Amino acid sequence: MRAPPRLTALLAAAALAVAGTALAPQPTASGTAAGCTVAYSTTGQWDSGFQGAVTVTNNGSPVENWTLTFDFPGSQKVAQGWNGKWSQSGKTVTAVNESWNGKIATGGSLSAGFIASWSGSNPAPTAFRLNGVACDGGPGPSDPSDPPTDPPTDPPGPGGTPPKLRASGNKLVDENGTTRRMLGVNRSGGEFACIQGYGIFDGPVDDASVRAIADWKVNTVRIPLNEECWLGLAHVKPEYAGANYIAAVRQFVTRLEAHGITPVVELHWTHGRYTGGDSHCPDTEYATCQKPMPNARYTPAFWTSVAQTFKDDPAVVFDLFNEPFPDRATGDIDAAWTCWRDGGNCPGIDFEVAGMQSLVNAVRATGAQNLVLIPGIAYSNDMRQWLTYRPADPAGNLAAAWHTYNFNVCASESCWNEQLAPVAAEVPFVAGEIGENTCSHGYIDRVMAWLDSHGASYLGWTWNTWDCSSGPALISDYNGTPTSFGAGLRDHLKGLS
Image 1: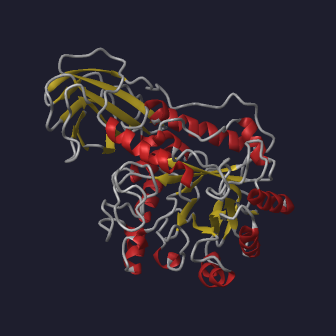
Image 2: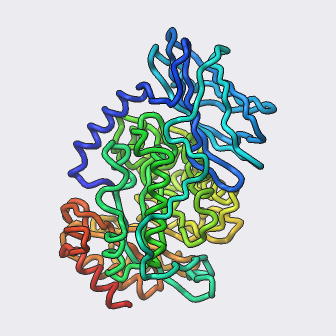
Image 3: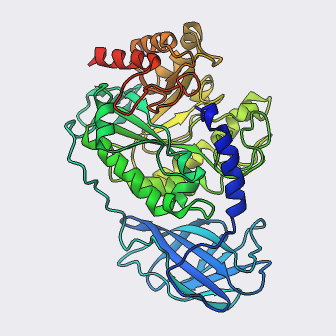
């Protein structure tokens, strides 16, 4: 689901704000050298890899093109990076500007990031050179020496441990082979609050708020995320980015699991300027709105980092991309599905696309075996060629993800029987978002009845206190008081328990 209309002005303001701060000076923990300063940080670390970031501040004459070099003290090896062309020879790492970020004004700064492997220990480099000139270097203000350990201070919830879900034929089963369904809600906010600069979530995600969700007999919560906030790009306020953002998401996941609730981490807003059909923020490349497809520049790195963060927790489910709509960029439906799977230079899309296959590959390359949800096209409402184009998965652990609202094209039982039933007969079927903009529940009542009859899963949009006609919203307060729309989902879930 796209952001509700009440956020339109905020989105426009945020786009202007981030555009104006892309080269703003960043705070560092070190002193200022005559020529340049580099702040180095480890924004996330796991058993064999880590995510690193550098912020370079230019204290000398304006720079037209830059090359940053440093030596790793240990056995670290860069695998991929962003905001620069990264390479490594021996212990020496080199990052060269992209065509679009070569200039650094006097007093200006830029940030770049990378994912690397390590073994034994992971000490930080201490010497940096910008275009051959030595810079002052030091740890960034949020540099963790270890991965965020975050268990929350809240007491454990009453729900026990969530199941470790996996695909078995067209069903989801737990570690004991028992058939399960994901039945619950979305908790929006993590996709937009950080990029708009006022927080990480929209409303509380403490233990009391999770208990209120659990009281509806919810067993699954989907958590929309923003890739630029997770990766800690320079235009995102540092208090809502990188290690701080990741730690907040991990804490929320831990709270949900303490109540026996399955967390679904989902990529909602992404990078890439898009000016074609159904463009929602054509004036900015930043992750301030829904784009037609994920991008090759950042999204594989995002999923590599997310998968590394949660690969040892098979109860966490990965939802690769919110609502693809390559079909709005081209009138050729086969080309749209090919773009969906293979990515690359897609017709009508202004940036290089990361297809679903490359994202599955990024997740599995980390060793993560978690269940992965793959959405359809037309804002995840069109599933007609999902089986034909579905990505290959060496883990055999994929499910199809569908979204439905009363205003979608496929919004009738006849369409569901024709287009969805064949998919649900072959693979686990998850309606990641169900909703309506009527402030009532007549439509989702029909949706839930159909999905129940096919053994499918569904999650209501959304557990936020918005106007139900513009969100739509399930609740009027975070104690769980339902809107008229939300009462339909709450009562149905309680009736199933």
